[in-house]
Amino acid sequence: MDGAVPGFDGYFVPIVLNTDRSEWILGNQIEGLKEYGTFVPWEETAAQGYIILNENATAAKLTGAKTELEVDELIAHIRMGVQLMRVPLIYIEYSGRFGDMELLRSARRAIGSARLFYGGGIDSAEKARLAGEHAHTVVVGNIVYSDLAAALSTVAAVYK
Ligand SMILES: CC(C)=CCC/C(C)=C/CC/C(C)=C/CC/C(C)=C/CC/C(C)=C/CC/C(C)=C/CC/C(C)=C/COP(=O)(O)OP(=O)(O)O
Ligand SMILES: O=P(O)(O)OC[C@@H](O)CO
Image 1: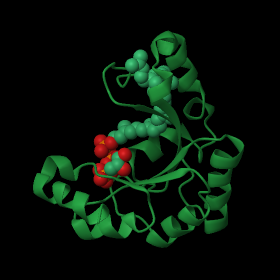
Image 2: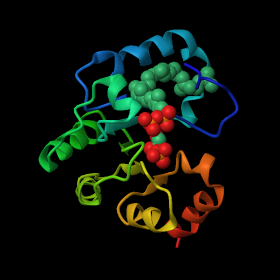
Image 3: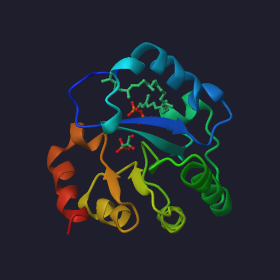
Image 4: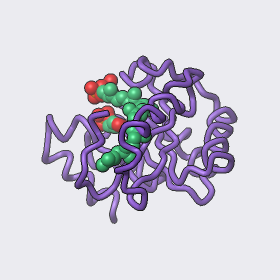
């Protein structure tokens, strides 16, 4: 619940789409809303359909995510989020390693009117460029702490 800090431009609330553990689909979110619901800036807040595809990521272990998704399963998860749950964005999460760009390409084809976010293993401009070919938004994580220059180089690679 550390993210409930006022003053940011926006807030994303993740809903893990590829887990059977209900606390990561709605349980923790409801607990959060019980505590902070009155203060949430709804105009700047959106749900995020969160699909975790690296089995070694902390988030995958914590949530018991089913990370081995075939293309048709991935597309079904995206449609569940975008078409049935109406989330405005899907986050393909590979935190800790660079992901499968063919899967990302398939995700983009299925995304409809939602936005596609990608995160995981972006440590160079080239990897950012590859992910940016399919994702609307590329998220940079650990490289910010280990190599700031490389992290900054990703910006121009995506916004070209
Ligand atoms: C009042 C105010 C300003 C509010 C703004 C915030 C807001 C909208 C609050 C509303 C209340 C609410 C709904 C809160 C959400 C509560 C909550 C905790 C929901 C669960 C979120 C969720 C489903 C998360 C799943 C993903 C997950 C478990 C991520 C963990 C990430 C993690 C531990 C990463 C570690 O990364 P790292 O150390 O780099 O390791 P890896 O390399 O292995 O990734
Ligand atoms: O640390 P990395 O592997 O860049 O991952 C970033 C992001 O996907 C975390 O949500």
